[in-house]
Amino acid sequence: DAGVIQSPRHEVTEMGQEVTLRCKPISGHDYLFWYRQTMMRGLELLIYFNNNVPIDDSGMPEDRFSAKMPNASFSTLKIQPSEPRDSAVYFCASSLVSDNYGYTFGSGTRLTVV
Amino acid sequence: GQNIDQPTEMTATEGAIVQINCTYQTSGFNGLFWYQQHAGEAPTFLSYNVLDGLEEKGRFSSFLSRSKGYSYLLLKELQMKDSASYLCAVSNGQNFVFGPGTRLSVLP
Image 1: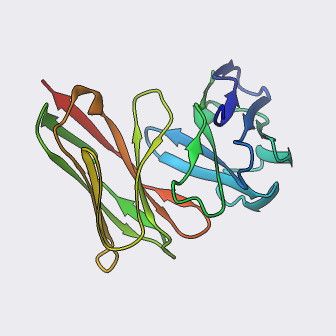
Image 2 (image 1 turned 45 degrees about the vertical axis):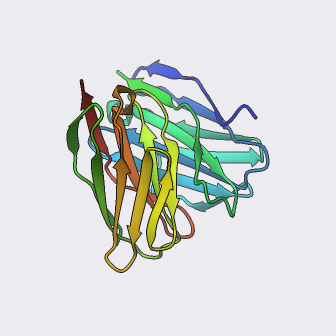
């Protein structure tokens, strides 16, 4: 298995622009998670899906952030409009329901908003 | 509420043993995980404890006391490649809550 695949690896954009981050989970995994990591706040859960349905989006910072999972093999995290404080590494992770090995993380997208 | 504490930084010498502590207070408990994260990379799974006691995997061991809300990760025979951040994470049955991570520097 190729693991969790995220794209792009790096994104530099100007303030006010729309940013779309993409994730392909491991085939067969029922859960998909979006995390944001910064030096100040560590790893923060933004939203997670179970069988493509959003379960908890309480970590989404504000209405500028939205996430979708149209099918079991694809999810997007969108920021519109982007702001400099959104600069962070965004990780996608997936897991099985009864997986005792926790999550498998993607390589992350390093977002820089200037 | 949910709170996980770890030391921010630790330094140790190559070949030595180091213990990284984690204390937690979470609503619900379904296991405690340790992840390793090298700079610029994704976290990778190291160990999992759901029952009290010690789990050993090669040079790495992890201990859990549920009554005390306490875990530690023990790294033996330290190598330079062990320089990384170590994240403690608690599963509450629905998702993980991650600690702030401990940045370990291994010196020659």
